[in-house]
Image (cartoon, rainbow, N blue to C red; front, side):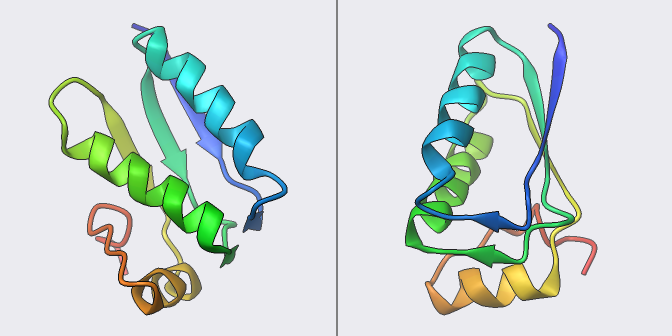
Length: 93
């Protein structure tokens, strides 16, 4: 299975979430292992947070291979304010 890395931009908002979702869905459907790099991601809205939450739930499943990288303190604070925790993304903070 090939690997694919998605490097998020600085924002994951309603304007970009559909494109990101479509791209990731295609790779997951092909069985690719995904690396999700959030090193530049500092701003999410509720749509972006929902996508990250969905990906975290997929990560808990045995049928998907996801690796999280480079979560920022800013992103962690935003997600926590929405009640979303993604321990794998913030293990290095």
